[in-house]
Image (cartoon, rainbow, N blue to C red; front, side):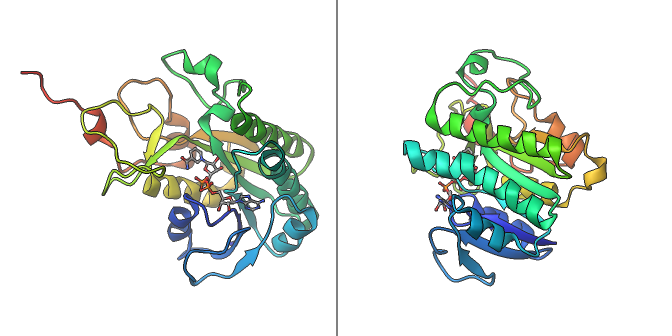
Length: 253
Ligand SMILES: NC(=O)c1ccc[n+]([C@@H]2O[C@H](COP(=O)([O-])OP(=O)(O)OC[C@H]3O[C@@H](n4cnc5c(N)ncnc54)[C@H](O)[C@@H]3O)[C@@H](O)[C@H]2O)c1
């Protein structure tokens, strides 16, 4: 499959590319160049620029959106909301039926849900709250929902929260996970996240429950606050890293 990746050069992109690269033809795009030249073509594309996104999508079978901008009012809307509109228009323009979107868990399960402590699923009505990052991503997702209702499109959205590299337990924002301490109950390894994206890219469209599906991507964790069973049953995703060195506590003496 020919896969256009928007926002490919952030934190998640370099974990998604290895999951896809031996099976698919990739076109990497971003507003910043890759840190080191890789084996895939790179195009500078601003997701807020409709003609640029439409042009990059020509000839593709799938568009995968990893782009995000979290901190600036205007740019956050341009990237996280309008970027999805542009992606959907590009898909419709070229007859691309497969869109993979990504975002944080709280674009759906915002503060009103986070106070619950059990069984939160990706099929709850979204309550992102008012935080800029969550809100702009939630609006972007809503745009994709409307496009999926009206066009021959399959939209899969993968939601994440915390990522760890299980070999080092390093956190993306710096620092490391602390053994024996709780970790946020929506955490996953980068590698398992990349694999979830691959499974969404390769999912048989006709076998998806509908043409608009959302998946919570986090590893098996004992508290059961969130539920990852949909990613397992629908995508066949199976986390390989359980991050237990962080959440298991030493036996009290
Ligand atoms: N990293 C995390 O902790 C985390 C947690 C939850 C969800 N997510 C989600 O995962 C996905 C990937 O996030 P990430 O961690 O790689 O983010 P990131 O901030 O590291 O990377 C985002 C990429 O988007 C690019 N970008 C910004 N503005 C752009 C524009 N106008 N046009 C094109 N590209 C632009 C950036 O240059 C960057 O390379 C996002 O949907 C994000 O919401 C990430």
